Length: 224
Image 1: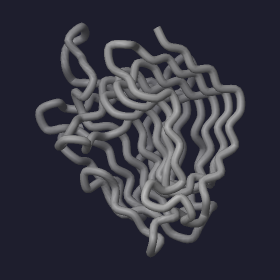
Image 2 (image 1 turned 180 degrees about the horizontal axis):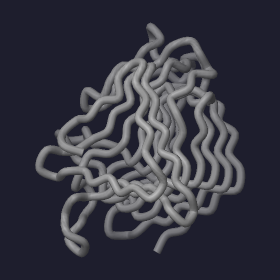
Image 3 (image 1 turned 30 degrees about the vertical axis):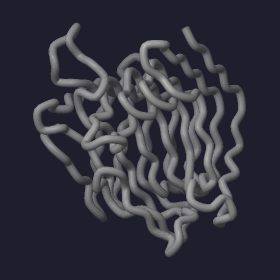
Image 4 (image 1 turned 90 degrees about the vertical axis):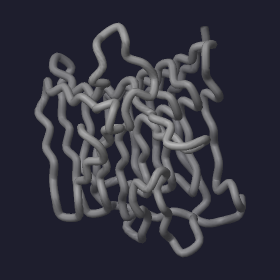
């Protein structure tokens, strides 16, 4: 990934099992799914898809590259019904809770989360207004500089997720997320971490609708 790579409205990117995708550090390689685009990254237990740093093994670090941003057309509780992604990563939100932005299965994302400016960093995966039409399971976020997994509204579900050694929150939601999560394992390191879970309805007004109401089952959170 060299710089910001966009999957635009109407386009579909299919990534085969066993593929390694290297995010270029010098250009802040980042993969962004715009509303109406789809990313299908379908790995297997034996052949996962790995998004990693282009730096040499042993020198890779949190924030080497950008991360993965998925924008959808599911509801968010932002006035006007639309949000603008962090670091100019696209408009998200809409009225379709069943919107389909593609699927991620057996995917690992590591050493991502570049800081563009103070308090403006990318997550391992940002689900921005993503609907429940896609499928997200068997996903690991490892050594991300910002949050591991974050939902900005939407209705997307996730199952079998691991977040390890994030430097900020491991599992985060805001703007009215109404999805489900099951079988989530979180490990935090004392060198740099914030909350295991950060949960907001809307940081500017807790009464905005639709109210965040995720259903979460079978979560384990460990520190050092």
